[in-house]
Image (cartoon, rainbow, N blue to C red; front, side, top):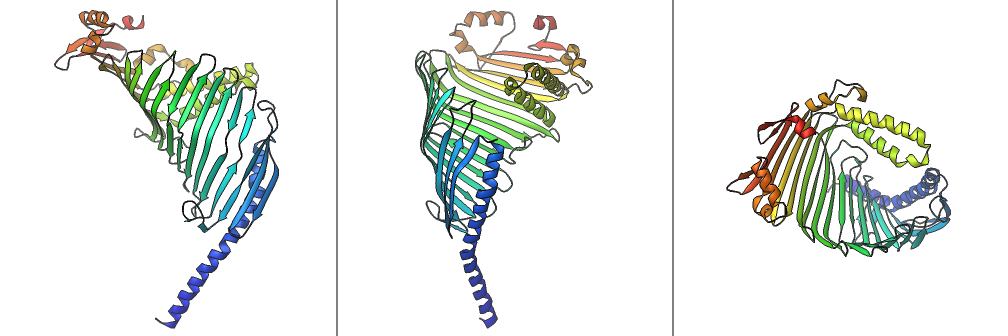
Length: 443
């Protein structure tokens, strides 16, 4: 190997070695400045003095820093002030991080502990066990966080409702492009109403959520929840197993600046005194404008904070926002589809309805809305499929026979179902492909 090449490799290896020695000290200095200046000031300014750092100790070493914070929470409207939180732990400086179960690479990692605490407010008492959290900041500024709490006890004083969360675990990942992945699970969540003595247990619930760009609606997002078992005691005794929920939002294929929403809810098995045995509900809505979503969220926020402002002014403001939301809804072309399958009396019954709202783009005010124009802009299709054998052994057998004789329900063979097909289009109604007077529906 040429001498110059040997020198170049030696210098490169020496530079890498120096970097691994110098970088931890440099990263530690940046972390100290970030915590001591920016984070503390941000907490003080954003909390409006209700959260204060009363004691802070940050010992910055070469490869690791130690942190201890005493936090005071003061809120005269909610808590019996003041409350003190004690947070302490270690921060490792990159690029080599001593994380569990093995070392990793990144800018920094931390293992923090929040001591057990008890909050007492006017409405609830909260007791939280020792909280442990760890997070890692990667070279691309991505952040991974893991939080664990063995037990959280919540007692709602007014309704005497006691809640217990066992083995809560929260995992959060935020990538450089602000895409987010969150996962929350617990071993058990219990509710106990001390007045009615009703007990409700949720076994091994979990929730996961993903979004491409945090805080933006018009992007691909997912929220899913799984619940293996729900068990309730008398007097509302029931047992539901294999519960799944998923909610989605995606950029719409119908046009730019439009969003599609959909959801699936399934309960595979239900045991109770009611004849309900299973539920499957699928729903989707297409073509929602961003302006409508923004206006709707603004209206919800206004309703949430209505009690803390002048009621007359708030009602006037909410009325204005409600009219704006109603106008946007009337102008927005929307496609809605719902499928509902219910297991009952040993059979599966299916209801599917589709709605097309063409949108009244010509109106400029909610006062311009006319009922006749709304009917002409609305198309509705309904398909009902009933299991004939299960209907025959249900309390609705005689009613079903009446509807069959009147032509509303049509027996279908060889699958032995009862079918109802209804449609409303261009201001006219049809049942099983026969014209039906509109007055009969509106009365």
